[in-house]
Length: 176
Image 1 (spheres, rainbow, N blue to C red):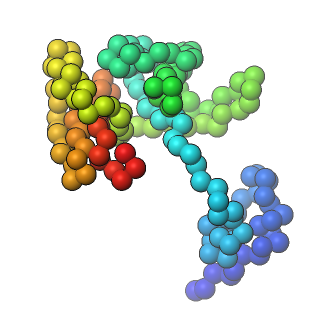
Image 2: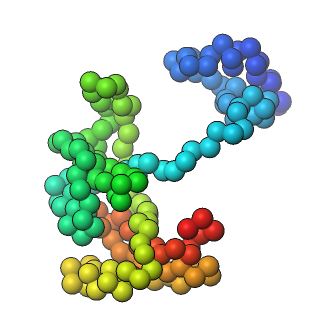
């Protein structure tokens, strides 16, 4: 069965009207609509990384003390940590954001996550041995090591919620 091609007029009439559901064939990413999308728009970076944790106080202390991350904002449902003045590590209580949150600045839609995720902090290559020693002193076992073909190195360990944390030196990607 062939899907009916979406109408550009229908698409254009619904821009900004997110309460009107689109059929999958009418999405922005349908091949007929791709030429309508601006080609020069590209994100500059990932600003925030969110982790969902069972004990916000313990997780916040873990990241603040192990990584020296200052708190940007916090309340009973989340903690925002400054990562090098370039990005934010958000810690959310698991199940604590399943309803939209009304703030003076706007409304944040519901979100949540379960299970261990993987993310990486970039570190200087010269600091890798000191990080290994710091983890050993904190009795945090390193679960894996990688020597990447581009010359970078990574170590992997778990946080309190079993998220896989990577410390990566330059040389693991063409861009890093």
